[in-house]
Image 1: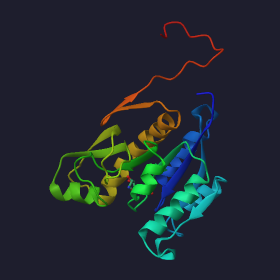
Image 2: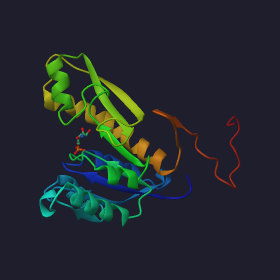
Image 3: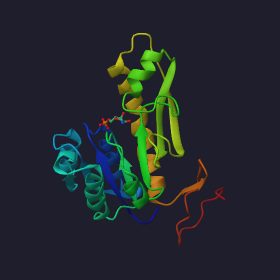
Image 4: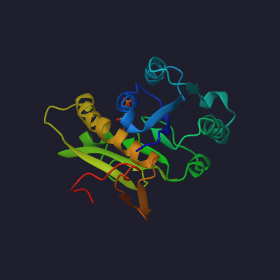
Length: 218
Ligand code: GRF
């Protein structure tokens, strides 16, 4: 992946998923730079992580706008100004309006702490525990105009232990998210996801021009 692509991240919370992406992006071979971290919450811990990493930040608060569409437009403008190749929702706790989703078609990646289509919504870990499932996990998917719904990129299963509470289970799920989210962001940023309806096919890494193909690699 010769060229470095641009990622904008939206978050509302502590930003451990942002940190995983920043850590991955610290390797120049990763091929993605985080160019903006935007939040709907001025107190989001993820904004501090961005500042520490020298990444520009933006705060767009719902309360500062007359209605949801105005908020969506302001958020869209802030993100578009960063010219991202991929938009990453890393614990962004607001539903994006259809205008925002259409502005970045098949280029918005979300991570959800549940095995979709089970337990969509804002309390996936709590809901899975309450249901009594033995296995849950996380889903990294493309965003469409329905909540927690777009084509699945990656999923990982996490076993529920008998003594788990919401915090301990969520912590183990996040470890999986930290692995999968950067990988998905990289693939989308480099145009390596081909969609056939709900099915996402991952295209192989392109051979860099000028580099000899290593033996045994087709
Ligand atoms: C993640 O589990 C994400 O799936 C959910 O919120 C959590 C955000 O965690 N939507 P963090 O802020 O990245 O630590």
